[in-house]
Image (tube, rainbow, N blue to C red; front, top):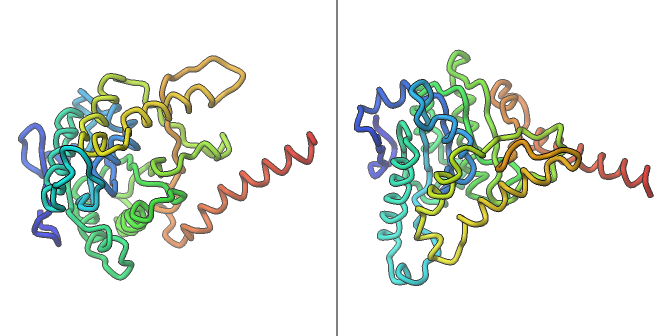
Amino acid sequence: MEFNKTTAQSYIPDGSDLNTALSKTTHLAIGAHQDDLEIFAYNGIAACYSQRDKWFTGITVTNGAGSSRVGVYENYTDEEMVQVRADEQNKAAFVGDYAAQFQLDYSSSEVKDTANDSATEDLTRILEKAGAKTIYLHNPADKHDTHISVLAKSLAALRKLPEELKPEAVYGCEVWRDLDWMLDSDKSVLDCSLYENMANSLVSLYDSQISGGKRYDLATAGRRLANATYFDSHSSDDATALTWAIDLTPLVQDPSLSIKDYTLGYIDRFKADVGEKLDRLI
């Protein structure tokens, strides 16, 4: 498969050919940076782990050249950090038993260029071959500009698919800004309780980030536990780890829908709920 970047790469952990890996893919996630997939799409990774009829494929769009670096990585060049982060992502793909892992190698500035459709074209090629039924993306209320830009490219690619290849479920997941504020009735609940040891291991593989001063391993586990514990105040916990997502399926099924208006609808419903409680109880 050819991509717009000659430096783009694919990794197949079990050594099969690319077409075989994509043809068996059932769950697929598109993330901006190395480690995003393991943070926000663990529900899909766990659902496919050690299954023969379910397979997870990951796509990382940017190259991580702008990573912060201290300690052992303090004097690494951008080019060296790109290689370190690519290696870490492939290690996660091996540990998580992914069908395939793609790294498209775009810079953040290239992805944030709204006139540059190259990443959308690459994503479309992969999505057409994979035909995955469950898709995990960044959410449109995320506060990271690159995450929003990757989401935009991802939705553009999904909207281009013929009807028979469009997924059954598309989730916009939490990373930089959680989704606890959403009404419970609006939340897509993604259970991440399975294989706690693997869940922790996958995020911990990103030593360049953790040693660089960002404890994503602890923060990710903590957020999932907090979501599970604080989800329902009147019953015992059914899960030990949960993440929240916005249901983006309607945006893919109906390309005429405004992404902005659709997202603000969730915020408006939250605002109305808070206002109603204050009016009623104060």
